[in-house]
Amino acid sequence: MDKPLILVCNDDGVNAPGIRALIEATRDLGKLLVVAPDKPQSGTGHGITINSTLRLNKLEEAENLEVYSCSGTPVDCIKLAIFKLLPKKPDIVISGINHGSNASINVIYSGTMSAAVEGSLEGVPSIGFSLLDFDINADFSASAIIARKITQQVLQSGLPNGICLNVNVPKLDHSEIMGIKICRQAEGNWEEEFEARTDPTGKEYFWLTGTFKNYDSGTDTDIWALENNYVSVVPIQHDLTAHNALNKLKDWNL
Amino acid sequence: MDKPLILVCNDDGVNAPGIRALIEATRDLGKLLVVAPDKPQSGTGHGITINSTLRLNKLEEAENLEVYSCSGTPVDCIKLAIFKLLPKKPDIVISGINHGSNASINVIYSGTMSAAVEGSLEGVPSIGFSLLDFDINADFSASAIIARKITQQVLQSGLPNGICLNVNVPKLDHSEIMGIKICRQAEGNWEEEFEARTDPTGKEYFWLTGTFKNYDSGTDTDIWALENNYVSVVPIQHDLTAHNALNKLKDWNL
Image (cartoon, rainbow over the protein chains, first blue to last red):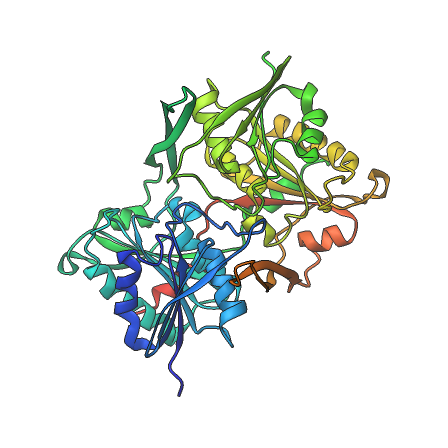
C-alpha cells in the first residue's frame, strides 16, 4: 500500500520551529509535502490572494519530504498544494504547530486553523495544532508527541465530512498533561487597546494590542480544558449558519 | 431619544460605489461613522494586522456623518472604530454593499462579512450586504432599498446574541425581486485553477482563478434563493464548534 500523502502548513512561516517540530514528529508516517508561507502570516484568518500574484519556491527535497515556501497566506498554500502541486488529494492536512493559542475565538483569526478549515473544505481530513507558548524558542516536545498521536488517529479513522480539528496543547512537560479532551469553543473575545505612536514625520499610527476575555464558565470548553492541564480538541465546521436562529428570523415581516 | 449610532464598513475600500450606496441608503436613519479600508481588501477573511502598524485618516465630516479610511483589514476597521474612535458601542454595524456574491462558502473568505462577524463578536447587531454583481459600475439601487429595509428591521428588533446576517441580493431590478428568504448557507466550494505566467526575469508566478461549485440540492439554501430571484438572509455565528460531532469524537481512544 502507498504511504499516506500528508500536506503540512502553518502560519508562522516555513522556517518557524513549530512546523519543523511537526515535520519531524510525522515524518515516518507518510510522504510529506510542506507548503507554508515564506514569512509570518499570523492573524491572516481565511484570507486569500486575489488581487496579487503568488510565488512558490522549492526549498528542500529529500526521501518522502518536499518543502515549498509560498508568498501567500496559509489558505493560498493549501489551494496551491491541492490544485497545482499534487496529482491527487492528500490523505490528511496538518497545520502548525502554532506558536501560541488558537483556543476559543482565536480560531477565527488564525491562519494556522484556516489552513485546516480549507483542507476540510476540499474534503480532506484536517487538523490544526497549537502550543500555548508564543516564544520563538518554545519547547515543542510534548506538543509533537500529541500531534503525532492525533495525526495517527485521524489517518486511521478519518473525520466526519466537513469537519476539522482544532487541537491546543498546554505549555507543560508531557508527563504533566492530564489527557486529551473533546471540547466546544469557549465563548470569549478580545478587548482591544490601540497603542498610539507618532512616526518620524509627526503622523499618528497604531499598534493593535489587547486582552483575551473568557465569558464562558462551562467545564466543557477548550479554555477550561487547557486551564486544567488537558489538551483540547474542538471539532470545527465551515458551515457558519446559525441553524438555531433560522426559525426565529422567519417571524420577521420582511 | 438619541439617533442610533451606525458603524459602516466594507472590504472593497472606502471609495467603492457599494459603500457609497449603503451610506446614502441609511444616512437619515442615524449618526453614521464610516471606517473602511483605504484600498480593496477583498478576500482578506477575518484577517487582522498584528505584525504591522495601522493608520487612520479622516476624509469627511458632515452632519451625522464622519468618514475615515484605514490602512488595515475590514476587521481592523471595526476594532479601531469600537475601541479607539467611539465613546460607546454602536447600535448596529452594516458592511457593504459588496461588489459580488458572499453566498455559500464565499462568506468565509469575505472581508465584508468578517467585518459583520467582528461586530457581532463585540455584541453589536451586525449585517453584511452583497450584490451579485462584481462590476465597479454595478447598479446598487435595488440592493440599497433592501439594505435600508433590513437595517431598519434590525435597529427595531435586534438580533439573537452572537449572530449576524449575511444578506445577498440578486442582480435584478427591485420590481423583479420575488421577496426575502431566511436561508442556510449552501454547501459548496471553489474548484481552483492557478494560471501560471512568467515574469520579465523568467521566473514563474501564479494567479488564483476558480469556479464555484454548489453541491447542495436543498431548496432552503442561499444559492437556491438567489437563483430563484429572492434576496437571501443567512444568520451567521462565530461559534465554529461542530456540536453534532462532539459525541462522535468522544468514542476515540486518545
